[in-house]
Every structure is written in C-alpha cells, then in structure tokens.
Image (cartoon, rainbow, N blue to C red; front, side, top):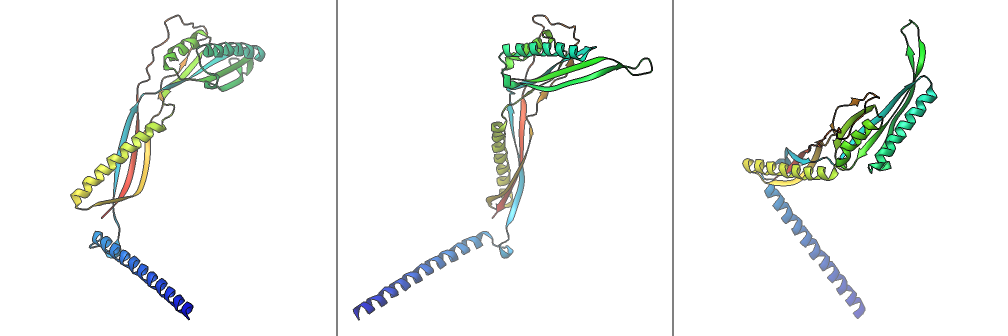
Length: 256
C-alpha cells in the first residue's frame, strides 16, 4: 500500500515538473515574440526589410616576381643542322640562367617548333630550308636579376625576347586585406544610411564580391637580330612599379 502511494507521489512530482517546464518555455517564447514584434511595428506578417549597398577596398602592392619569354630561332638548309644549332644555343642560354641562380622549376619550355621555308619568287614553291624555334618562360623571383637576365638573353644568342611582366606571386593575402576594407566601407555606408532613414541596422543577410587589379604589368616584345651582341652595362634598367588590387562587394543588411 505504501509502495503504491509512493509511486503515485513520484508521478505527481514528474507531471508537476513537466508542467512547470512547459510554462517556463511558453512564457519565454511569448516574451521573445513580444520583443520581436517591437522591431517589426507597422509591418505586415513580420516582413523583413533590407538595405543593399556596395563597398570598395583597395590595396596597393609592389610586384614581387617577373616573367619573361626568351627564345632562339634558327634557319638552316637542313633540319638536322637547324636543330643542332638551336639546341646548342638554348642549352647555353639555360645554363647561363642557372648561373644567375634561376631555379630549374622556374625555367619552363613554352614552345618548340620546326617548319619548312619556301621560296615563291620563281612562281612556284621551292623548299629552301627549315626553321627551328624554341622558347622558355623564365620566372625571376629576385627582381635585381631582371636586367641581368635580359643582358644574358642578348649576349647568349637569343633573338626573341618578350612578354616581360611583373606580377604578385601570391595575391590572396592582398585580396583578403582589400576584402576587409571593402566590407568595412560597405558597413559604414549602411550605418550612415540607416541613421538617416531612422532605422536600426540588423544582421548581414547576403554578400557578393568581385575583384580587379593585380594583373601583370606587361612590357613590349623585342625581336633581336641573331648578329646583335650586348656589351657590359647595356642591360636596360627596369622598374616593377605598383599594382592596385581592388575588391568590390555588394552586401545586404536587415533593417529593424
């Protein structure tokens, strides 16, 4: 009998506790809804209003690498002779680049071509020889070496030098700085607009971005006659300049 009474008492306590928890949760939700309704006074069905605004962030950076294309074109009556001379010159050129502490991974063969040459002066096609051309793209991580590489290209037998450009090896950190500036700019403009409109700025509900800048600074392409030689001190002085990395953002804030 006592055991049955105790069991009933225990269930009564459980039910009372559950009822109290339900009332606490119900009152909490009710209070929260009243608070939210205060932020949505005058709105139908708690419609969410937003402000969409743009922002811009710009970071000016100094390029830290250069790239240049260096090549040799050889004309001979026999294809084997053209290949041999071209290969000898290119091997010598690549060895010179490595002497300037250019790493092998930064020297990439970008093209190798063999094609016949014809004479059309006698109103017919006459084979007169072959042209072999080969070029490498050189990445220069020490910008103090740029002039030396150009000098070596001339003195080492290269007759095609071009596409010199300066760029940023790893632009992501710079883009992140520009992105943060753009978001700060957008938020500042949104807060100013919200103040004028007499509303409160809420949470960020959407974000998009586009970026520009950070493109290589390109220089003209040079074609050197194979007979041209450079002399000490003739290497050009080159300057990397600067680049603007710009991030534009479009953000939407909730207004209360």
